[in-house]
Image 1: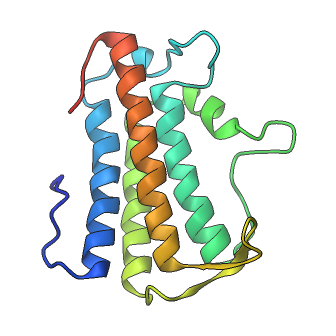
Image 2: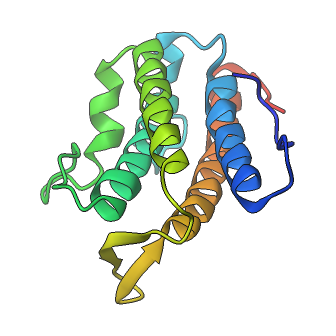
Length: 168
């Protein structure tokens, strides 16, 4: 997929989905050429979960949570537990970076099809906890663009600290 933030048309759906795909493609771009060893390094002493692998896993599971659990109302089968609520970061250390990226890409393809099949005003099956009512697909897409873009900034910092690579 081409990494662009310019939609083919200027309608709301095309703009939202283009920016989401751009953020997703940026995750992959931030990981280009990194070794598996460097992808598991945690360069910030007070943030042992902040690794390239952990961040890739986190954005993958964030999308899972929003689309499958909140929007579709499915049971939560994520890797987290009550004892380890951030497990998506730690378990990823033992998974090759290319596998994490491939799983994220395959999942993104499925969610792209899901989003294409729904109206932007589709209400989530589960309430947004902080609002006490369900969010729309539109809100979820906006939120995911913000969340993934923020974590791309984290990927920039971690990547530069572990191997000196600077992103764009």
